[in-house]
Length: 225
Image (cartoon, rainbow, N blue to C red; front, side, top):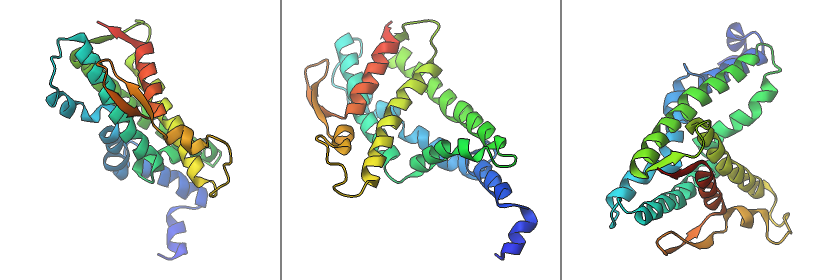
């Protein structure tokens, strides 16, 4: 398309960038429903909980069995989520857009970008995950929030920030030139090397550091009902 045709629609490059961001990440964006929000929900930590429950050999009425199931779902779910965020993917595109948006708000009419990001995060990601976790934690895992002043939305932000923080550091480690990180252990090792850990039932498995941290957030926010 000729440049002149483009600038009949957008008077400046700034106008184009603001509209592009809204189209990709905004509530009316064609890509938002099929690319970002739905992909996030598809790859979230507890996406495989139904399969885990169907393959369970124990009884969910037993507290130790429920705890072992919770830990296994977190162990495997965080690994999947960590990979989705740190690998080139829709998740990483979404995360990079979120990180860059404060800079773009300096553009003419750029504050619309911040409004778009906040609305998408709150309505399409945080709210949906909070509803899903409420059903799972209160039903399947029989957990309740420790503090009535703390909400499921608080937990969603805290838990997802743990994984996103680890994944961001993994992306930085990969972006560095080979051999540039001479520390021992390297940043890549700290984010991606697994650690042997036993679950509540005594079964040993490999855990990502981010999964152990995620479990810590769950224990800080929830207790047995």
